[in-house]
Image 1 (cartoon, helix red, strand yellow):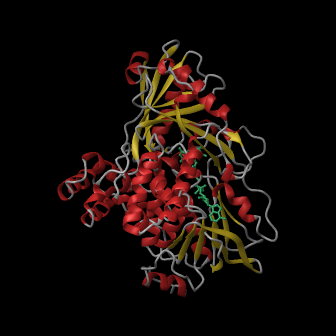
Image 2: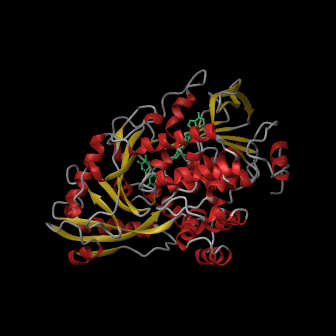
Image 3: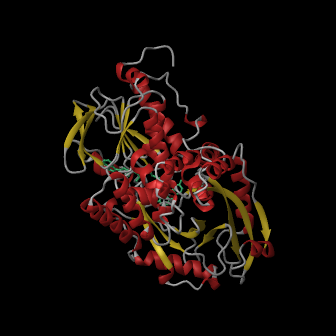
Length: 552
Ligand SMILES: Cc1cc2nc3c(=O)[nH]c(=O)nc-3n(C[C@H](O)[C@H](O)[C@H](O)COP(=O)(O)OP(=O)(O)OC[C@H]3O[C@@H](n4cnc5c(N)ncnc54)[C@H](O)[C@@H]3O)c2cc1C
């Protein structure tokens, strides 16, 4: 980073990288990012790594909205080929490869089967051609190319498939990020390590202007305290809240977003369940949907329905669960599923660009970055996008901000920078087994899948108190040490942050019920949580469980 001298704040940032998450920031920041979903966290990381003084502000916890309610696929989007979005598919497939390389503990290849029936709207030849193009667009591909399968071969991969009218199948590979929450957390932690301030449970209540230029934001902390934070540029990465945030401007722009709701249901392994993921065509309306092996369970979704309700209140409708169950039963007739088979369900709003009355599936998933000049200079909004392309979106966004700040010489480095937990699985498992024999093998594997090469840092806490090696959750095999690690090192503030978005016990079939009291006991013993605090934290976790388990 030579050449033009940096303005004060960027320079100060590069010489003072030990900022605490809640430290007061006195000089104007180079960049303030609103929203701790995948896009906001990715932007904050990119900016901080370039040396910009950066803050990330999230009203709830990291990854508490859309990113979490997704299908958790890192994919090129085979379907987008039908809409001619070759550029988007190419970019997504490039990003998929970068994620395999930079986050191997979090993102892994997933085989996907597309069965084809006599009455399918897309025949085997059309699908094979699409997959051939898909493979061609995947430069530097590390996963196997697609295969066309006979009917018999299809049934060996998924013996539970309905056989009537089955012609064959195609098999291909994409990526899955089972714990996308951790991808967001690691981006935010990397941002913090590079000097960014990360504020969670803090809402941006107002954008502040100086004439026609953004000059900061007003914050409302948990508990109601308000304060202002000065910034030379602001990125509104608030997902489906983008328009609501812009509404605080004296002259808000026309609506930018046209969200659609997508619902998933979570099932236990069912009779005839496939080994691979399945990309299926709904028999009633021809819509594509996924059945994905995930977290020892199955994730089935999604729907795509226009929905303008408050993003904080979006819930799955009963008809959506019924639709997914019915379509699944049509293709896996031996599954024997009923509404009671649904362990839990969730819905999220795709923060898509407003595009009139188009068929929802055809609305582009390509991201846009809108600069609000000349109305408000220095203010940008992120519209649309996918988890898969968050890194390239972040790079493009920070490039724009750097040019605006006169720092165009700073270029992004995230493409070649592994996330904090990237490492070698066997080396990490070996170290855990050798140094902390009290950890069970199942807990060791869990620690790798959640923290990657940072797992020994979690296990080291056991040296202070051997009881921290004990599992707190019989499903995920999470251990007590993770509660402390999350609250002390991973910006978690509440127990629901810990269970649902750090140690991931909350996504078990019981939604973290078994882990709740052991986790509270760890916090009481080590952090002095009194009965009042425990009751409040218990209520938060139960609220979160109720949200996920409530019928539509
Ligand atoms: C059903 C469904 C399935 C999907 N499946 C996939 C998939 O498989 N693969 C893929 O690549 N993409 C998928 N997507 C798309 C992807 O999930 C989204 O594009 C992406 O998660 C959007 O991330 P984000 O950071 O922009 O938004 P969010 O994750 O919603 O984050 C925005 C954050 O801003 C915060 N916020 C809002 N207002 C304020 C405020 N005033 N102050 C502070 N913070 C605020 C919110 O609390 C929230 O945490 C799917 C989307 C849906 C809905």
